[in-house]
Each structure stands twice: as C-alpha cells, then as structure tokens.
Image (cartoon, rainbow, N blue to C red; front, side, top):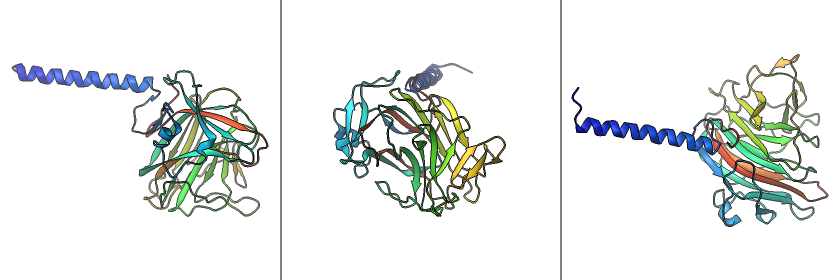
Length: 303
C-alpha cells in the first residue's frame, strides 16, 4: 500500500479520535461514572440560586422550595462547593421534593446520589424511580392502590420505619396485600441490613430493570451503599420469606418470583423523584443531597 498524504492524514485523524475517546473515558471516571453510559440527569447544585437549580428539574414538579437552601458542604471527591439542604419544619411544611421526567423512557436506569442526614428523627418517604403510563411533569398519588401494569410502577430507596436501615419500598402490578387488605408499598429487606449513619456523607446508588417481554417476570432492582451491593432482587433471587407485604432475604426461604413491572411495553422508566417527605415529626429534620447522576449503566462512587 502506498502511504501518501491522504492516508497519513486519515491515520492522524484515527489516532486523534482514539485519544479523544481515552480522554473522555478518564474524564467520566474522574466524575464518578465507572462505566460510560448515557447520562440522562446530572445535578451538582453548583448554581447561583435555587431558581437556577429548579430549571434543571420539572418546573411544575417541585414542592416547598422555601424549605430548600444551598449550603457549603460536599462529599469527599466532589468537584463543587455546594449541596442541597432540605429542611422539614413541623406545622409548616412536609419537607420538599424535586421531580424529573424522562419522556423518552428507559428499560434500565441507574441513579447515584450522595446524602447526609443531619438528623435521624421522622422520615416518611425518600428517593424514588418509576414510570407513569400517562406521564405528567409532577408526581401522582396512588398510596394503597395496586398498579394495573400499564399505568404505573415505583420503587423507593428508603429507611426502615424508624430503624434507619436501607431498604426498598415498592409498588408494582403483582405486589402483596397488607393485613388491612390495602396495597401499601411492599418492603424488601437484606439479610444483613445496612444502617444509615447520622452526620456522614453516604453514596447511594439504585437500579431498576424492566421486564422484557412484558409477559415475563424478569424485571430486577438493586441498590449499593458506598459502592457495596446490599440487595439485588430479580427472578429466582434472592431466597426469602414473604410476610404480607414484606420480603426478607433468607437463604432458607423460596426464590423470589421476579418483577413484572409492566404488562404494556409502552410503560418505561420515565421519572426520578428526589423526595424528603416528613409527616409526623415534632422537630426539625434536615438532609443534604449532592452529586446526582442518572445513567443507563452503573455509575459508582466519586473518584
């Protein structure tokens, strides 16, 4: 082959593209994205005001912006200087939330965020990922009702009712009833629960994978704390025991049947709900949130 100027230029271009790709990979690793995927949401709260922060979220979906503030406290490895504080004040508000929609929808999504609980009093609900068949720019109700398979599903990474251990709180079409004959969110607990410390930054990541085809129960969910996988639930794993709407991991129990999140392929993961919802606390409750990323692949802690 004759190496003329054209071939030489093409070779330089290829080498340049490879170099750019390598640099991009290192940049993503530096920002905490361990395996490059499509990033669909990134929020580090490095804005001049809360109004600018809200512009990155649904303008109709936030609640109690007056309960939020930007403070100078960030997790180790963060490249910024600010995080979001949400404060619950008794008889004034119920905490606050931000809401983000993904109209294109996804069959699998990972969300990583950092949290520091400045108090550990009362917390009703926390951060959620899910899908609405009729997507709106704000969260909907549905407590106590079982989804039909084409209308909605939602799962939240939460604390265990005053015990302050991490768990999943989940609504889907094949969920179990409560003793009161209502469909309150089903709870999924690891055999070795991970405690939520007070006053420490924690890296939380959770994932949802939709069932495909929609007639199968091969959907999954999992969560990691500080890069350690605490619980993964899918078809055939883990073994556990159901007690009404509570599934506890137990090696002597039966394999989990899997998630049929949907019966209609149009239902996809299309919202993220950053929720600090307090309803019965008699004192102020405060939490810090920072460095949120939603991606189509695992993200991991900040490097």
